Image (cartoon, rainbow, N blue to C red; front, top):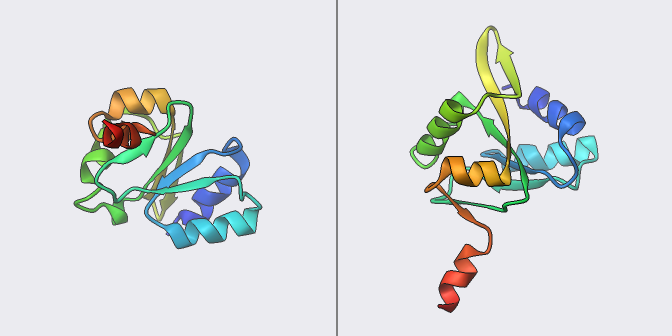
Length: 126
């Protein structure tokens, strides 16, 4: 619940080629088709370590009902260190909070839960 409103906000406000970090890949795909935003990129929350680009613009969609063991730490860090740019409430309860975070800021504030894009490839070559 609340994703329709959250995606409508992103359709209007997200710069071209922004990265949306969420746990709803099918809903994201539908949103991109519906709002004509094929430029946006999806990245799942529930991974061991998020990989971010320094120059990326990220929109983190935090949904209290989708808080899992895999994303608990990063949910906590984001909600403690940043303020949401948009909150969807259903019957007075928070359904989705959207956080816009620039890549460099995300890398510095969310370390060690994130890595720099390309870091894995460099590590494998060494």
